[in-house]
Image 1: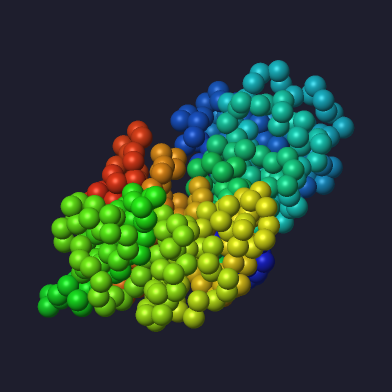
Image 2 (image 1 turned 90 degrees about the vertical axis):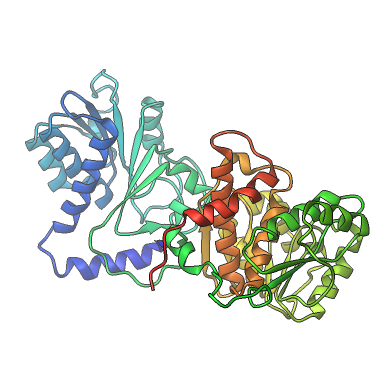
Amino acid sequence: MRSAHTVEQVRAAEAELMATLPDGALMQRAAAGLAYAVLDLLGSAYGRRVLVLVGSGDNGGDALYAGAMLARRGCAVEALLLSERAHEAGRDALVRAGGRVVLPSERPGALSAARPDVVVDGIVGIGGQPGLRPEAVAALEAVSGVPVVAVDVPSGVDVDGGTLDGPHVEATLTVTFGTHKIAHLVGPASAAAGAVHLVDIGLDLPEAPVEALQEADVAALLPRPSPDAHKYTRGVVGIRAGSAAYPGAGLLSVVGAATGLCGMVRYVGDAAVADRVRQAHPEVVGEGRVQAWVVGSGGGDAAGDELAAAVSDGVPVLVDADALVHVTGPLGVPAVLTPHAGELARMLGVEREVIEADPLTHARRAASTYDAVVLLKGRHTLIATPAGRVRVTTTGVPWLATAGAGDVLGGLIGALLAAGLTPYDAASVGSWLHGAAATLASGGGPIVAGEVAVAIPEVVRRLPAVRG
């Protein structure tokens, strides 16, 4: 599991660890990890030029000590201090190692004219406020186009919320310490972090409020048939989706469900769609008992009635697209709601731009309001529980933004619900598989929704073996 902790949790863990270590030892651990990551990005040390942008906090100290280590390896290191309160011991270490320090009083024009090979962002750490001061913005603009390695988080982002409010660093690589921070996983701030490299510094941390499943987690959660399983014990999912106007949505919902992750798929809905389903998937049957329902994709005017019928069964239900319009409060059954930003905006009575600017807050708010697991689709999809726990899906490729992909996702999650997963696990495992299948099917090129479903069995086959 990739865990993302709050600033408060990290600060408490750091204080507990520092009480057991010699003075400065924790900063040295962080600086060493940072220096090695910079070297790995550069590919070599001797003669490479490194510019360190240094703020007033311990984040700047990490950057200065890392600069000293790089200087000892043969890099030409300059540190531009953006505050008179820059970490004194780190500054002295860099000078002793042969690096050069430029004081705030010496700017502008005191830096070497040679363009650096990399910039180390030690401007603001995890305790900083969103946005950057003008002097930091000017320093970054002067080296525009040079790869930036952010220390812990890109300076200027909202660390605990994942939002952006004002100027911020756009990093090529972020080197973080002890644990991921929420801004590394949650957008829009996550896009500013670039690749994220985690350095273990020995923190003892509590349960994280935000997580991202990894391959091993998915393998452990995935329902697998027992030796004596049959189609009914593996779960039956029912699909109430599609209409005469949108037959493809119903068919793609079935395609997502019929990937072998549950024992049987039933289709209940428009007769013309049912004919297409039978032709494409002769194993899909008609009305009968189910362990979960998928409702809404392409449902049109009938979506409200289909939702009511599904809820009356008392089994878990996944609600998507047209059926979301008819969700006005808690449904009274275990539920997964799968809106995109526009649909969630309508459900919460705000503008779409508000959702996109702060998806974490609004996914949590919706989960609490509707007493359901809410899967908010996006670059990094969020899955939130009414209690505020969140998982982030980091699999997938931009090519997944294609018509019908959400229909496939709904069917896939419905199958996992029928197979016995909780709504939270079904939504997060289904979303992870959906993204991984898109990556596999894409191979770096365009895909259509049906290809994502076809790739799901291969993704499952490639998951690591589960012991025990």
